Image 1 (spheres, rainbow, N blue to C red):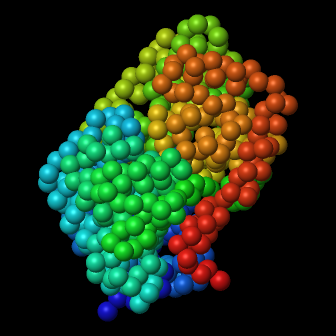
Image 2 (image 1 turned 90 degrees about the vertical axis):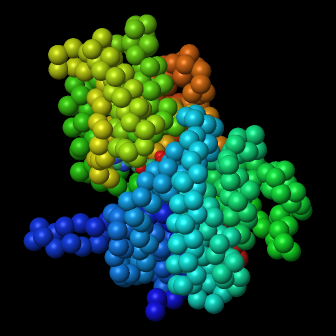
Image 3 (image 1 turned 180 degrees about the vertical axis):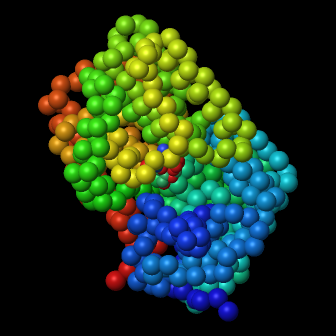
Length: 464
Ligand code: ADQ
């Protein structure tokens, strides 16, 4: 019989990675991430359980304990991975919820598998949750879980948080099983979003599609009340500041600049290689500024780190080709021997190296066409100490609502992006420090722990 908990997190992925030790033994190691950092204290206090996929297909590993958290793996077969995860989650829902910046693909068999897998996650939660427990379901891969779980376990308190945007009615209505998804979410007692606008889209949709009444406080569903609200996620600010202040990281930041030939301006982009992140438009802006003679090789250099992501999904394969072609074009046209214009890394880098890059960069470009929040923008700010630095930030990132002192731009307007980048490059150090200080103060109080507390508080979970 499964170990039972009074607090359960359900997410597509478990917060662990399997590693092989030097003597060939396989071990589980916590995988670092904002979500686990935020939830760790709550999970430990309640002897909590995290339900999710361990990576890999076939039989799931047996449940185990790691650093005070009970880990409960859910299996996925190869076919389920392809249909539920790569298909329905990442080729249908992901593009649709991000303004359909790529055309969503709709397939009946993907939807069917999405249902089956959501049912499996819900079943696992029903088995491990104690009487009256709190279950917090995460993200777009598991939108049916709240209602499926409620059917089995009406005694539970169920929260749901969506990490990505929630689209306006006109877009959501494209989805073939739209009412089922909406009912799925409405199985929760509280549905949390990154942005107020997203919560409003949700409330309007409930009225439009299901004729449900909103009282100003909650949506009335089958005699229950479902609350919806905005809970902007954040980073572990203190930990990021500490990391960036580490002398080894600072030394590495200097070394990075030296290796780049000590240019006047280092421009940085760090993203998962995803078409929502606006990587191409940022490269194009840089190329045009070089062509216009507004930026010069040797003085300005760009680093683009793009983590491999969802590599079996076609949209992502096409994007990689486009980005790499653009990098090649820029270096071909403007680079010199020993001095490329763009340094492109299609790899994941560790936390220290990432912090050193943030510390080394004069201008950080975060230019998504649409993004739920964007934590890279917040990480950059936390890594700047009192050194200034400019954040160029898309108005279409959730982070733009909070980070008003960034250099905001409209990523759909290429000239606007170029002008904003030039303003950021040319800004006076005193102005940059002033802007940075305001944003740093904000992040010190609005960190990821506060995010988790405010959600759980609204859900009515006693954390003492
Ligand atoms: P993501 O789309 O993955 O998250 P983001 O918020 O930017 O986007 O988080 C990416 C994370 O990965 C950051 O912590 C960053 O440091 C790390 N990362 C990126 N590139 C890396 C690299 N090359 N090497 C190492 N680390 C790298 C989704 C939503 C976002 C929302 C988050 C959290 O799309 O809008 O902010 O969830 O809710």
